[in-house]
Length: 156
Image: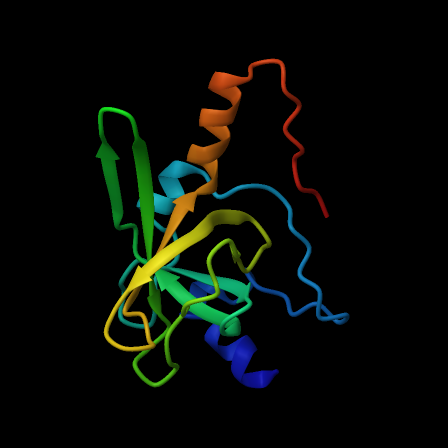
């Protein structure tokens, strides 16, 4: 528990952004908006902008990663996609994801949904970069195609 909590605090200004839930269940509440995904508001110990994120996948279980705002956009004839890059917490922590983790929800320390894990790239069994479809972007696509649909908003 102590190691998990210390990893969720990348720098002095982030000390209040993560509260370890006593029942060990982080409540989902809201969505990380585009501006924060592209330009994280938290600075790590080295003054770099990043956002610590958590996922619980079938392949690797609960892991902590970091997002630095990198996004990739593809607009094809029949497909449009956007991917959010997630890196391992550090080189000692191991991969953020592996095969079997696809579909996992990626959240920040406040329980805001950032994305849906779609894949990764790397050598062997470990991924160097994990890709997620940003949740805000997916919701926009759903609402554009189905304007009368009720989209459940996660709440505490």
